[in-house]
Image (tube, rainbow, N blue to C red; front, side, top):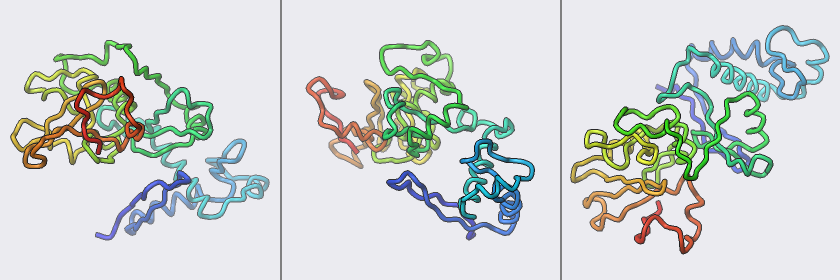
Length: 275
């Protein structure tokens, strides 16, 4: 009952702290891995050619100025990175289990900017560029460009891989008002009409909703109603929640929406409530 591995919130310095309590079996597995990969000179990210296997020579051990805790951190990072390259790890919500990070192309040369993972972690741009050297990269154009494979109509019910990638890049996380769940933890929801009611699996009709909030949307009198226009999803509560039934949007993943609106902006004449 005591076993857990808990990652805390990311700090202002972009570092993430946490807590863990391992059962004897997990501890036995971890200590065997760290005995090999947390040795001085092994998995050193500052080395010209990091040593993963084999015995580090005296020069590599001498040049390694990391503490024991830092060596354990680097070993776990390497093990996690290698696990993501294993094809046996399968898929998650229709996509390969992998790190998905998005950034604005205008920020690529700005070291003060950051990218964002599908889980909500902010990645400094210098780290993002380094990660991108060994990644498959996509350019998402948020304009009037309409790639055909993002519009499936009634041909399929479940969102495709490219549609999920676009939703991760554009929505970043759950669209339910006030929810901070990242895109990794979300399902795809037909915002402009459920599939059984004739909804279309088109990118401008789809949104992200986490497993906790997704069941709140539906046709019943006590269900929330969703709609997506101009790339923004609104959730209208039932009367039991809000007698005025004011539509709401989630600005948690989009702090830029809290900026004062321009005269030409806005979803429509009646501005939704930002949550």
